[in-house]
Image (cartoon, rainbow over all chains, first blue to last red; front, side, top):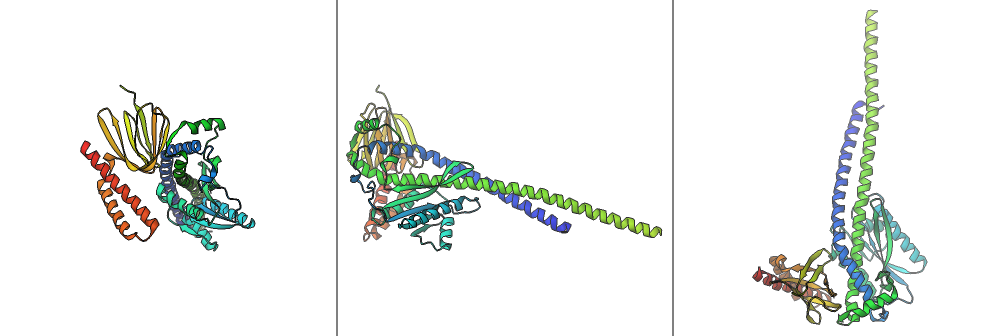
Length: 296
Length: 139
């Protein structure tokens, strides 16, 4: 039986932990709002971009731009993993890491080499411990997610692709589905497949859309301008989704932790009260026993 | 009075501007072009350059750091990598950006890629200062 003082100390400690987890929950909530605002502000840009690109790329020969060229054989690919810099967000990072690990294993089984780029300290740490070779690691970048970061990350893939080192580039990010569900998602970044540039519009409609525009310079030249930037746009949305997911995951994890603390305090208080009661009873017994003895 | 055209300037960070104006003039990669209400659908890439738009008697300026513009009859949408309104440009920051770019330009002569990047940074900084001057004289 632990002493009364021990239990009291333990309760105090758990209360402090609860305070910390509660504060972290609130911080995560504030950060989540920040990222969500950024996502909101970015949405019009991304939507417009996809729309214009979709209508432009109709009927365009994939040969005109290296970013559109579908490879005949693939023996080396690049993978960009977006993970968080910080932990304490439940299984968030682990889910992403496992998705990356599985990707690496699959590709190895197919006999393809993988150039591996990791954004976020948690992912980089994990693969460093495992001694998985990484072409590049970007730590501490997820604190501030902005378009410059997206450009920087996308450049890893673009460079490797344009140099001909790899034939395909994939990236793994965490898709934000809801506050309780964030799904690691693998997407192909390069080459850009015509399908994912446009929305699902009927082919005939799209034809008209492309023909309607006067363009300056030619439609193909514009496309050449837009395509590399589109890669940045996609990377930025991936980063924003990952950021949103991270904060949501942390909020959930910290909420759980706070609840667990509450539970623990409840249990400990019960134990404490029982122990106190037992101590009082024992003392009473002593006194009564002493009094009886004196009466003789 | 002719109808007004809706001008929207969108950057990855925000919707910079959404306004009804009389005329918009943008710097395209192939030269300046002006847009009035009822323009034919038009798509152009934009150079690093200024954009001006007039509403009534007031003309405003903005610095556009490349991107593209989509024009339909009623609307101009400018999708810019980065953009700033003349009155919001921080001249000191632009000045120091120019100095940085100058320095890097001097260093980067050797390396081609760095040179191109430094040159682009230089262009943007100079544009911002030019546009800021315009905004100042009108305010």
